Amino acid sequence: MDSLGNTLVNFFRIIPDGVLVFFPSYVVMETLFTHWKEHSNIFMRMEQHKQIFEEPKFKNEFNSVMSAYYEKIGSADKVGGAFFGVCRGKVSEGLDFADNNGRAVIITGLPYPPFAEPKVQLKMEYLKDARSNFNRTELITDKQWYNQQATRAVNQAIGRVIRHKNDYGAIILCDERFTYSRGQDDLPLWLRPQLQKYDKFGPAQRDLTSFFKTAQNKYGHLVSIKNSLPDIKRDYTSGIVGGARGVVKLNPDAIFKDDDEIEDIDIEDYTTPSLSNNEIESRCDLLSSLKFDELHPVQPHHVAMAASRKREEGKRDDNPQTSQ
Image (cartoon, rainbow, N blue to C red):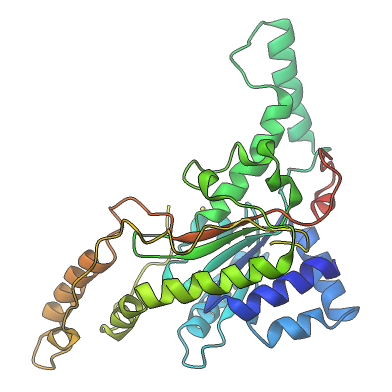
């Protein structure tokens, strides 16, 4: 528990603006929160670097928490925020954290479904029976299905950040099982070639710092232009380590090699008082299409970090808490 908490504190020192942290379940998240608040000073240290937001269980509380998070990220104090949510929750599957709202996503463990849950048992029994008694060999095995549920949830959470071709962010996988090939087989195809492992935390911390420095130098002017545009209401909804022993990352010098340079645009043309609201909005839409065109394929502007905390290789998570 303390190892993961200290890891988050150290990453919060480096990651600018907003960061998303996903846990395997509400039980795991609440257990860790209680420990960090009541039995150590970890939570207090986290708050020195990021304001902490927790995904609520109740729907009527969700909008207010999200609004507070976005407001914090957009504030002038530059402290930023950390949004703690769960895989398969609303945050991990239904919201867009582009640009400063999500400069990193941290996965704290593989979110296997509860092994003893009746619907999980029934699904696995169906697959096993269909393959053995009815020769349905085209179906995946019960074990493959069980593993697939975890990796699908991880992939959806990963997809909350790096939302367009000029976006950038870090992907940090805090589970040692991601260091093994079978832990990487179901990760997104664009992500797998970028994975590298570290045996020590220091080099990972150094390279993450270097990555954000390089990315901000490359794309910082785009963020400034976007932030200076007239405020247009946007719909944030959309229809997706390193523990102490290691991480995985992309060489920050390589991520920009094939990018096209974007010419500077005079922002005064878009804020002239004489323009009508419709003209301003039209020009903002044009500038957005030039600068933040989400129709283009997403480029791998990220640091991919994986694997870390000691655990027995191949251990199955029959209980969600074992992911921690």
